[in-house]
Amino acid sequence: MPFFDLPPLDDEAIGLASSDLVGEVALVNVFASWCLPCRVEHPLLMELAVTGKVALHGVNYKDKPEDARAWLDELGDPFLRIGADRDGRVGIDLGVYGVPETFVVDRTGRIRYKHVGPISQSDLEKYLLPLVEKLRQ
Amino acid sequence: MKHWFIGVLLSVTIAIPEAVSFENDAPIDDPVLEGRARELAKHIRCLVCQNQSIFDSDADLAKDLRQIVRERIMSGESDRAITGYLVERYGDFVLLRPPVKPKTYLLWFVPAIILLFAGAGVVRFLRRTGASGGRPEALNSAERRQVKSLISDEEVD
Image (cartoon, rainbow over all chains, first blue to last red; front, side, top):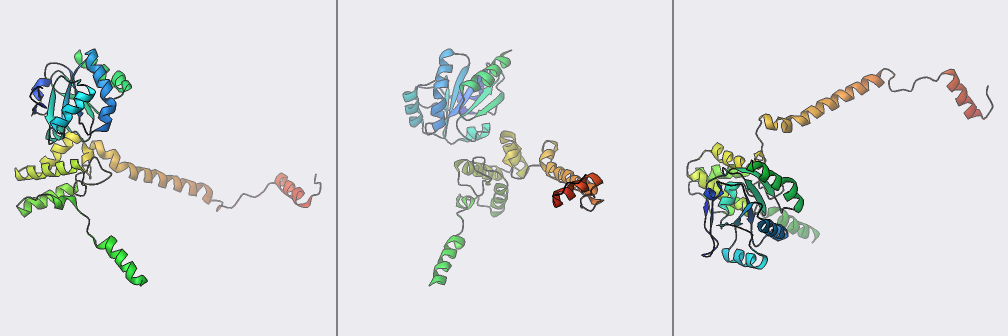
């Protein structure tokens, strides 16, 4: 995981840094308020957050923090931490080329898998959650 | 009148230069460095486009990548280091000319291998039918009788 330290969306939130991803297996979801497929996968992220199966963080990519905040207010906020990547540079450092993308990060903070596009229920059940389990051993 | 119209049509479609995205960016002051950036950009793929380089594409990601290329050139990085940075994040696919290394041997050599097999297949086919010159084999006596009966409508024993 390349080093990054992203500011929060606003004063009421907490930002996301690469150091936050060390210590436990986590998912990092790259999203934006202008991204339609992000809306499509959003309910799944909410459900995931509620079940607490795995830590979920967000990277707000090339977006205006106010817009992202409004989007999350409307749809719900499933993220523990959110980093505002306004110019998309952290995204590029992670190899992001579209939104949404979801990374599976292991305990040492290393990226183990990247899912491009919205995640589906079957993606979660067949690949992502089993991988999380495997990385926890 | 017709010639005039065709002339205008042609000049409008051909003479207007493509709005090349690379040239619309803020360039590096040093023309040598800017030249390097230009060459590099032509060989880096725009990942959100169909077969375009970041030199041509006006996609957001292409613009970001061009900026990164320029920044890294200005900070003294070599072309190799810059493409290495991108390949590390996006894979070999980010280069429009994938490198020839074991992983990409298949990509480079499969077309040639297929051609070889196809060529061998053609040779084999020609060898098999070549002896008879492509002419059908002669009929045996039973077949000749059959033909005769069919032609003459007479009963032949």
